[in-house]
Length: 355
Image (tube, rainbow, N blue to C red; front, side, top):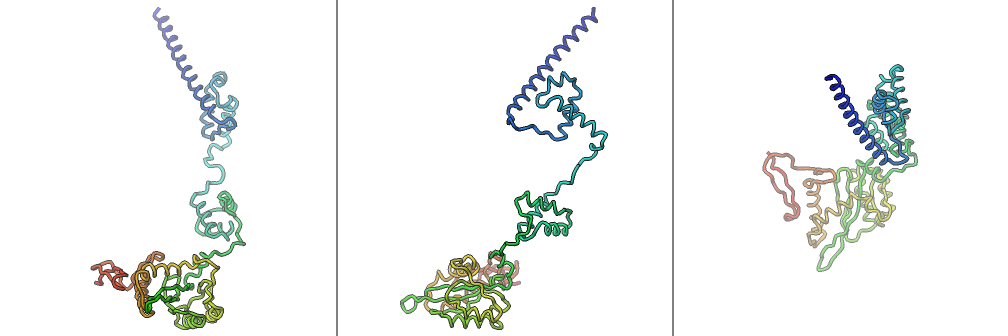
């Protein structure tokens, strides 16, 4: 009697548990249906190999009838097909191959390929590959070519590309000078007199020299200056190029004198002051920092002011473009801080007292 009662209780318990499990399975199936409905109609659900193996291993434990009753996302044939492949991998050795195919290229090498092409458009994929191998990396020409194509870069060398103005200046940095003229109004005998200042600047060091000051500059005046600066010991000694605008004062004879001395004049296109940016920046600096704050009464006073400004400009002023003083006269980070004043305190700089 007791045994029958116990068997009845176990049967009821099993039925209740089985019923609850089917409710849970039915709920999970409904969740999957909802997720499937959220998928785009034409979009397939793609699984990786690890996910297929997991599903196939679980599916094999179920009967065909139970598999058909519970499978929603994939047909039983698909899941069983995955299981067959899992068995095949056990015997063909592919399950021991952790990384089939060529190794994935590191992001560091990909970045190098892109960088070399962007910095050197005239390089082709073969030359880029040679440099990367030279740096100690392993990579093939085809891989370099594919990386460039995937990132929208032409793997072939750009043979039609022209040198940009920025590249020209950078490649001739040490032997390149720029020149320009600017005007300043002098208050002479109760009236304003315009005076022209002609200067040159060494692009690499930012060193400036005032070449001439005149109220009425002309061709012969400019030509004499050309002889002075291009001769032995002149400002253009050792320089190969001189940038200037299209001012009529830069005559053919002016250019001829420079060429004879081995300096090639580089005449800028019309209305392009940005191409002579270093000279334009000096004009802006000398006016904003100095000349715009003074009333000048003579050419001699102008020469004195410019001389003082150049001392400040070369030896005391920090230049943001090169992040240093051109020719520092006071160095050190110890001692009392002193202030140097020029032109009545208009120009100030600071340094430490020498120990």
